[in-house]
Structure formats: structure tokens, C-alpha cells
Image 1: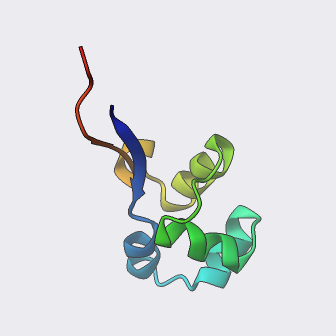
Image 2: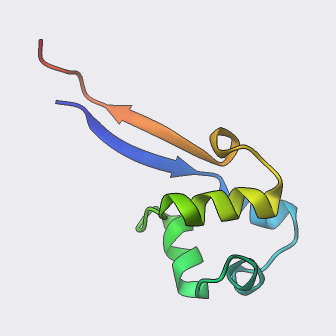
Length: 75
């Protein structure tokens, strides 16, 4: 069975843009705690929130979020 997770570069990009978690949260309309949870991988953002985050960084979805596959499929 394949285990799918979504990895992200939000923390790295936020640091590059010199944004605090609070500043990024305000720009995308969520709480600082939501940004912290996304960065730790504890929360997967909705498609709309992910697109909004990408828009703030002016990057494509695949440059911020990556689908990670673990394990193998049974055939």
C-alpha cells in the first residue's frame, strides 16, 4: 500500500521573504497557528489556501508543495 503525504517549503520560503508566521498568516487569511501547523506537516491546507500561499510567494504549486509517496502498491 502506498502512503501519500504532502511535503512543503512554506517555512523555507517564508524565511526567504523575511515574513514572520503572523505576517504570512495575515496575507493568506488564517491564524499564525495554522501556518505553524502547515510548516510542521501537522496540517494539510485546502486547495484554496495552498493556492493563496503560492500566490503570496508568486510560485507554482509544485514549487511549494510536493506529493510524497511511501511504500509500494500491491499488484
